[in-house]
Length: 281
Image (cartoon, rainbow, N blue to C red; front, side, top):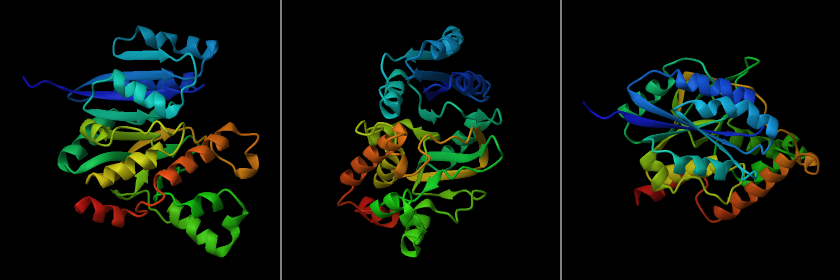
């Protein structure tokens, strides 16, 4: 009998223990010809949150790590990868709801059908029924500044922001995309290793466009799959403009990580077509 593939699900928690418990239950209910390992990394450093996660410690297919300090989302994801052995790496936000028991099997089938796909993201639905905008074009400094300031109301900046945010994207159609948010993302292990995982220079944001950029650069595709659905709570910690810089720590992290991203790709290709030209060389 052939050995079953292992699936690693990495969940980084920050004060969402209740959702994490339900998330893990949904993950463990997934059906298919695979072995499943769930790795929860808790960055909350909070006794009450830890107590809510404590029951997960007893589950045989679940590993729970309580960090003594908030090491950030990106470092925690890498920490989870180092603990796992899966051929497929699922990065799953704590609030995600598994809408069916066949999600993992369906994603693996897509990978098997198209060997050049390296990353898959799926359609999401918020608790209120709305569709979160999880697909973007690769970041550029104009759009990143204008979308959080009054500039986005000016025609020229508005068009640049709309282009970056892909406001006309049809979430009912499966297609290749520049990048997809890591709120629910699956990366093949060989691709993860080929691109050196998530760049630990980022703390909370921008690691998802970065890994997708590197995936395209290595000659793999990033694919959005519309016929697979998961749920989410719809709460974005980075929501808001630069005016909230001093009151919202997530905004400050977002600005910091955006600067790191822009510096990393200052003289690099900014569009997927140009990246493909590089990868073909």
